[in-house]
Amino acid sequence: MPSSVMPTPNQEHASTLAVSAVGLRKSYGDKTVLDGLDLRIPAGSVFALLGPNGAGKTTAVKILSTLITADGGQAQVAGHDLSAAPDKVRAAIGVTGQFSAVDGLITGEENMLLMADLHHLPRREGRRVAAELLERFDLTDAAKKPASAYSGGMKRRLDIAMTLVGDPRIIFLDEPTTGLDPRARHTMWQIIRDLVTGGVTVFLTTQYLEEADELADRIAVLHNGTLAAEGTADELKRIVPGGHVRLRFDDPAAYRSAATALREATRDDEALALQLPSDGSQRELRSILDWLDSAGIEADELTMHTPDLDDVFFALTGNTDQPKETAR
Ligand code: ADP
Image (cartoon, rainbow, N blue to C red; front, side):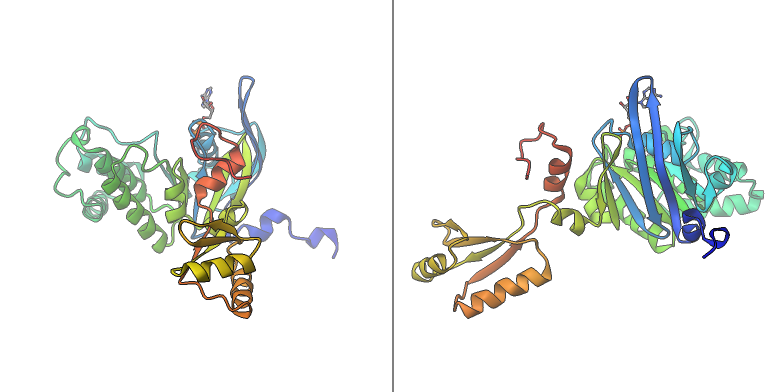
């Protein structure tokens, strides 16, 4: 193929990727925050950028939402180049989170109407959209109260409602549940799921492994300014050792003969249980089952244990502050 008709990587994926970034760099003074960040986020998916406090998550969101510029690298958001067409990027995205747009001095409704004005909606249309969104986010009763009187969860809901006035295709949610109580957190998770059902791409940053596991199609772990790993929650869990199949027996005699037959298994004589290492794949589980059958071993209980995201996170980042042992 002559080089002139070869699609560049950017052209090739512009229509299917909501965000693509190559080699994003950002430093503050001599502190390198992002050291060559690469991202490829399919449209219509939930992507979670996971990292502890100070990892650079907000910096990445600020760059991708045009609030600050990167020192190096390239990115397309909603098919538009960040540096060549920042206005087009801004028109396609919504951003909520740590730098919330909510003004506490005015009411929830006034905040919404202000957003409608910013988006140049005709007055009547603005009022209709504001009322609809306040209703959708269960804020109708509180609409006439000053936003400063709202709970943390209500403020986040108002913030998202304000973002949706502009009908964005991509929403950046920077730590949407940090500081929320469990109930408000679950409400926020449902809101995020509903956004995706509506066709929006969600770029989420979080410190919570559970949140990434719960919501994200793909998870990336930010560490030392680059992605230490990226994949589905299950893919990430499979990259750390520690997965195993556990066989438990009611009958001590059956346990002993199984333990003799399965010499490589780890024994738990008290629980009458044996552990076999496993990567958690269907293929491996099938071969373990076949092998147990052929050895005539019948366990009373068989359970699969895959490592959780905590294991992955600590294995990747080598974070030793945690009481949990790093799997390696
Ligand atoms: P996260 O969102 O993962 O908590 P941030 O992106 O907010 O992390 O910050 C990453 C690092 O960059 C932190 O060490 C922070 O102190 C530093 N940083 C962020 N913004 C600035 C700034 N405007 N000036 C100097 N340092 C900054």
